[in-house]
Amino acid sequence: MVKVFPLLFILLWSSAFITTKPIIDNSDPFSALAFRFIIVAFGFFLFSIYSKQKIIIQKKNLIESFFSGILFHGFYLGGVFFSISKGMPTGIAALIVTLQPILTNALSGPILNEKVTIKQWIGVLLGFVGAAIVLGFDVGSDIPMIGLVATIISLIAITASTIWQKKLSNNLPLSVSNMYQAIGGFTFHLIVIIFFAKPYIDFTQTFVIAMGHQILLVSFGAFTILMYLIKNNSASKTVSIFFLIPATSAFMAWLFLNENLTNLDLLGFLITTIGVYIATRN
Image (cartoon, rainbow, N blue to C red; front, top):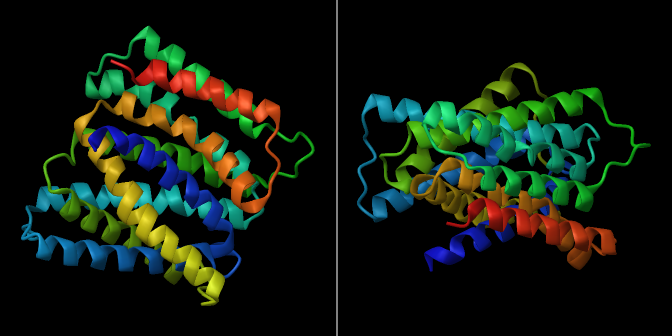
């Protein structure tokens, strides 16, 4: 079952891009994320109680998990949601965030003392090339500068969160760690709402379905798998699978939203798959 986790993660995480737009069409990004993560935190709290995990933890561990949640659920997801709400094309935002494995590989050596081999670098570069082919850059697109800045902040945040999680927050049960990370994410978005945003949520059927998907399948499912993979594998190998996400998202958009999927897209998907295999194989 454990060997299936990377595949499950890719499918679940990629599906989040399909439901992000319906959410921000019916709410501001920070209210939606605050709503999402207070429910996620409560869900992991109930699961921790049910599984008899100790939820009163040391201050050091609490701060580590809380800060990881601020980076991942706060800056990363907040930046992605905000950029898309400002008109940033979802595909281009996904491609920018897909640079994460390159940054992680560059930093995991000096910070985590992980050995990043030439094979892994070749795989990472192939993964990026394949992702770029799948998504492409529309030169005529009107990319908002504030959206571009927010996406770059997201890229830095998810890279820092991955390394932070691997280096520090690695000694708690997953449900407890995820609970405090969700609390960190909720706190971040609540502060943004109080000082900077005008909160609103329109609980349409579309919003409820899309949010339910992101809470159940992405936050409870994909994120837990990601934390497991980071905990049990090297950071550089774990994040290499992120290169499959833009291609998978494009395929899902073709399957469920009737968006075009060209032969060039299929070629990019193949190149990305080869790159991920090279970067992650033993």
